[in-house]
Image (cartoon, rainbow, N blue to C red; front, top):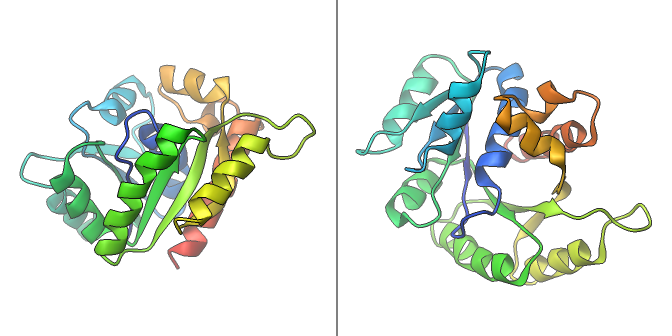
Length: 209
């Protein structure tokens, strides 16, 4: 089983949004469990709204994340995605140690970019491969990436950390899907939000081979 830890030391970076929107794609690729390690329980709240049973969301008990991932592995799931809180260093550290890859969602703003530095440093200290993904990306005026997204890429590369070619845009479909207990791919299968998630998931899978 491959484990993806989604981590950021800043709230509102898009951790849960990213987790739930790619989990269905991971589930179709061999089965996926989302480990909800955030006491706020946003992934669990989304799961309560769902009509579909999968992908499963399991709240991590207070005594740790490892037990959930070990059970998922024993039951034959191919993937686990750990949705982490921004400020619980023990949980973040435990998840990173278990992870095959650490995904760091970063919005293209000064505060988010600066906050990403501590998450990147933590992954580096634990000798874990990490990659950033730009979330909440505004559309470019000429069809390409917006200048602020290009600037964010440059900032992250200077830290240094790898950055996904894929971006997660600032799209209403993501929010509408969450409110209906669905993923972007379920809510609007041919939409831009769904397409962004497919591209991101392909890139992450390639990284975890």
